[in-house]
Amino acid sequence: MNGTHWTLRTVPSAGARHAFETFLLLNNVTGLAPGLYRYLALTHRLQQVDTDPAIPQRITKACFDQQFILRSGAVFLWTAVPYRMTWRYGERGYRDLHLDAGHVCQNLYLAAEAVGCGVCAIAAFDDDLMNGLLGMNGTDQFLIYLATVGKKGIRDG
Ligand SMILES: Cc1cc2nc3c(=O)[nH]c(=O)nc-3n(C[C@H](O)[C@H](O)[C@H](O)COP(=O)(O)O)c2cc1C
Image (cartoon, rainbow, N blue to C red):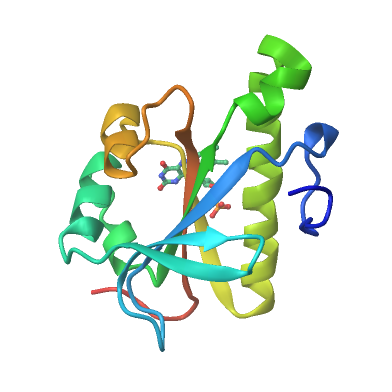
């Protein structure tokens, strides 16, 4: 962006590459229509991506039917754009992507705790199904990690 725009992040990243994009599946968030959104870091806004009522079910299926996804308030989905890392670090950049993902998700655990919420990290998902749902080819961009967030103390039936 011509050196005129930058983002300040709450997580460390190898070489400050910040190779992730964040998507959100909102199931039950006051003031926001349910659906899949993308977080726009430069403008700090959410962009609607898919409001098909079937999208939560599809994402759940792609995560091997982990039903708590449907009962969560929101799901954070982090996708990686590997070139942002590999142009500098080559193949080793893939290792950095996975280390960075751990930091990002851990920060979600910490932030959620501060507002009375709980998090569950999820790495069990079908790569092809998830990338297909997000419109990614799995090479230039792919889902790396996701996590549910929900209010503590609300028991599901
Ligand atoms: C890399 C990673 C992947 C995980 N994947 C899943 C998952 O797919 N489904 C799930 O229910 N929990 C998943 N978890 C959550 C762990 O099962 C959980 O953190 C662990 O059992 C300890 O429980 P606690 O976090 O409540 O202390 C994952 C955690 C990590 C760190």
